[in-house]
Structure formats: C-alpha cells, structure tokens
Length: 136
Image (cartoon, rainbow, N blue to C red; front, side, top):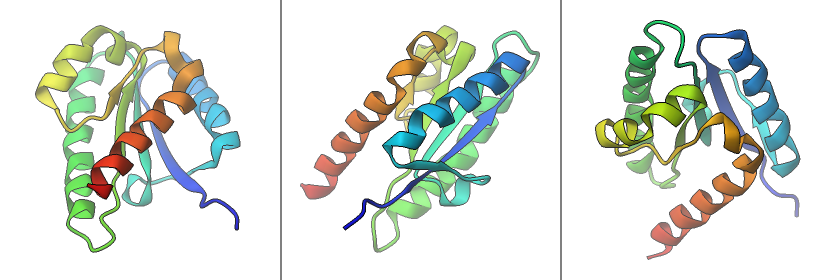
C-alpha cells in the first residue's frame, strides 16, 4: 500500500528571496510525500511565506489567515474530520511570531527562515499532535 500524497499550498509575499524560499520549502517537502497545489481549498498544509520588508505584507497575511481559518473550520465539520495545518513562515513569522499566535490562535506553526531545513520534521510533529487529538 502506498502512502497518500499530501498537498501543500505555499503562498509567498514580497521579495524575490521569498519566492526562492517557497520553492526551497516545496523541494524539502516533496521527498516526504507532499505535492504542490495551486489552491488552499484542497491543501493538507497551507504555508504563508512572508516578507517583513515589503509594505502591507503583514496585513495581507492576516487577511489570508482569516480565509484559511474558514476552510479549516469547514473541514472540521465534515464527516471525515480532516484538518488543515496552517503555517506562517518567513521574516514576518520570525519577527511577529507571538503576535501571529495571539491574533490567530488557529495557526499551527510559525517559523522563520533559519528553520526551513527542519520543515518536514516540524510538520510531522504537528501531524502526530493532530492525529492524537482525533484519536481521543
């Protein structure tokens, strides 16, 4: 039996480095059973990859987080009880992590550029945590 491919949606805001980092995230996740999707509607994981330098990026993140939370809530109400992991990465994640979790407590993970290499491991930990909650 083959493992189910998981879908990851990565949205990068701002600078060219974020676009590069978003591709790096996708490349890191591919060997762990993730494939890129162009929409968050069917994603198992949605990552907002943010830039702290570009104007209004932080506001756009919170707007998109609200939309992602709606999808997350809708999924929890479905019969299969599937869940979406919501993550905020990049410079805003690093600089505003506490504020993000305060304003958006449904965000599962906040991480900065220095921890991209640990992304598969961090997602696996969150998946196990969610799985544990579903089994209770």
